[in-house]
Image 1 (tube, rainbow, N blue to C red):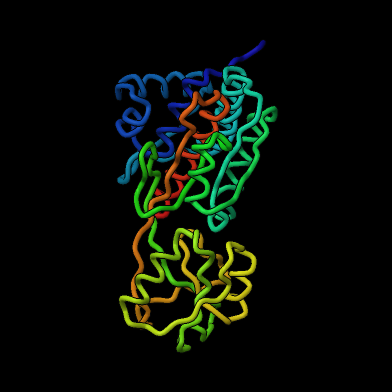
Image 2 (tube, rainbow, N blue to C red; image 1 turned 90 degrees about the horizontal axis):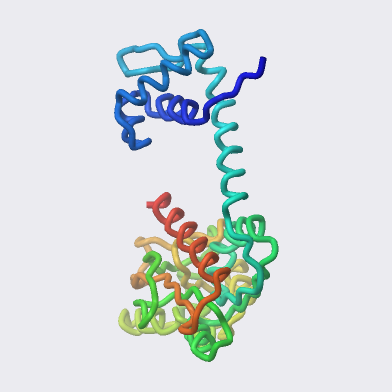
Length: 290
């Protein structure tokens, strides 16, 4: 005899197991408490065993419930994967994305990997320049969408999140103590350069510029060798760098907006979908970091 599991019952079971209560699970599922209780009873009747027992902290899984929990989650994940696969449009074409080199490694790889898995027929073409240059390229029609780092969003931009600009140096390094202070500033088009120079001049700190090129490899090499410090968004600082804290006499730096811009011309469906992936991933990441 063939037995078919009802995924709606399993979804209620998992929600109750992970919230330890019928009412809290009902809120998650947007159902009434009575409906969730009825679904749990139907599942217990189908298996002929109790799945929950009550203690002072609420509901907890029985031994049978423990056995079911992991398998139910895997089945729901497969169900959702199949549903998404069969109902998601099969986009194709090319999306030209611009993003500054100093944030590309910190933000982009997991987004690109997930998007490529879901839409293998879409080609992503990457362009790394300064935020100013990227916006110019977008206006000229050379790019479809860009991510920028700016003090504020410009016309038509969408701020995804704010992040603090911080001083970083080699872990255990001494470069921040030197005077004149050696700073890897980047080229004159670098978004952070004006904020850095303004802060240093305002503090009356003697400093000298090193690595005045928009080459993250060259700039980070100077910092790794403890020959300079630089400014990065806090969320992008590499693990082998150290954020230089308030115990130093370095001036504080402003927060920057991470912004999303789409082409003024009609964006393709693939471009709009990739923009959605960017929003979801970056917003989720900042909520988790908060």
